[in-house]
Image (cartoon, rainbow, N blue to C red; front, side):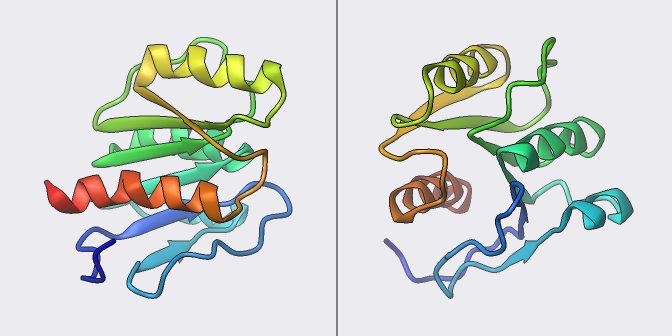
Length: 143
């Protein structure tokens, strides 16, 4: 993996109980709390927006209002019943070790809004999960 700095700002909305993402030092990102999301000015359109679990739902709705270059929805909570295709690239990630219901929902959501990626993980942001998120971010840097 390249050590050159990312040129796009990465905004991360955590799931409930998530305090920190263990991203490499070269990744410049802004960790958003749930409260930050509601008080955030417009996110630049060349940004990457990442959400995990409940944070993925908030990221989805934020991207509907403020399109971004890439939206990465990680293990989204199954509450979006009628998804709308949004601008920009969208990836929906789900862990192989998550419940069948969660995996099925993520695949269904991806069919409507973007590309599905299955990661070898559960419903936790472990090293493997973070690695797959970084691959999605790297693709933006290459464009």
